[in-house]
Image 1 (cartoon, rainbow, N blue to C red):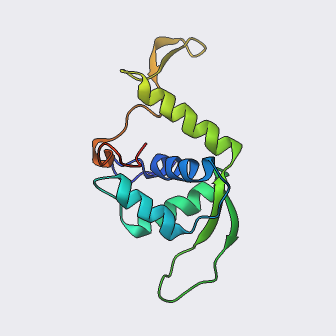
Image 2 (image 1 turned 120 degrees about the vertical axis):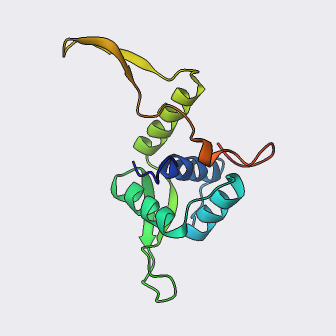
Image 3 (image 1 turned 180 degrees about the vertical axis):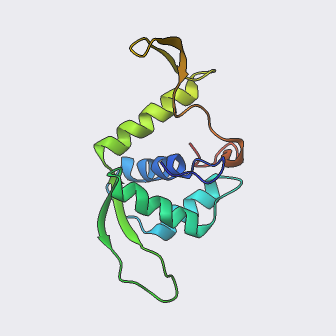
Length: 140
């Protein structure tokens, strides 16, 4: 998954797409996704980071891209039209959201390698730099 420093941009994008496409199927442009990031988080990442994140999530099979827009000199980035989360994307989002509700993260023992100490999940906590904008916001 893509992250920019401490920000979990990938998780934020998955959450926004999942929320916007949950109740009714629709096609989202990158601009709509980015607008929701700006509305939902007090510190939104830069456009080029978000575009790269969406492109990576499509290539990794977590987002459904119905088409790619023709290149435009005024916006020189790959632009997908997104229609929702794949089953893998939805499961990944649920897994990370479940881990966020645990006060100390998810732990498990790895006995196969001889290590019986706790191993932390990859999706432990919502980073402080991507905090929700507050009550009534559309953040996760």
